[in-house]
Image: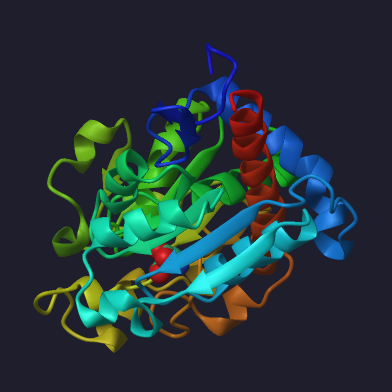
Length: 318
Ligand code: ASP
């Protein structure tokens, strides 16, 4: 953010393609703005911020939380929001991604929110469309707004991200949430632990500036935050775990394992949860620790802030 803008500049527009490319000031600025949007995220009331702007949600992969919260965020700020999924678009008739980009340019979209199973799709589109592009998840690569909403949730409870021990546990290999969170949290001064069975830990994880564990109990010891990840079977080309039951025994978060973390540890999950696989219902629903619902709530406020910052910058440079 040295040049005063938020996100990566490509052509004349800024884009949020990943946490990579943001610096601590940019992260703090979006979290601070999101704080101011929390009550508006609940009831609306800032409809002139994006009045006359069009946000297009282009989701090639399924989504419940992310798509809905981008839609709500856009509407809360007064934008026109359009949802498009490939099964209902020309993509299903074989139109290439770049032809779709040309079509979107002709429609003068202001913000394109894109989710795709291929890493790099958002970055590719950012080169081709005139809209600001927001990466809503590209394969196992990045999911920046998830990491930002996680950071906001943690900061609200702990007042800071610096000096906290955060254990990110489960299917790290296939998780864009883990990658974006590792980037953001290490940049903001947290100590990050990654934990999973050896088959679900990426080969180079030890070089990410984190501690790597295969024993969940060791990873949880004295942790301030425990972030559980879903087993992403849709990205698995083979069997990575023997059975869900065995996985739960060793890597599922239950009350007994959670007791190893700090007494006031926060429990997080990006959703959707596989109850009884990576997390026990009694932990997921225990409001003394679980902030999983609050994460969803913070998702709307963070996405309002991201939309606002990108459109504000585009307006300034128009
Ligand atoms: N919703 C998150 C994502 O899209 C996490 C998950 O699917 O497990 O990456």
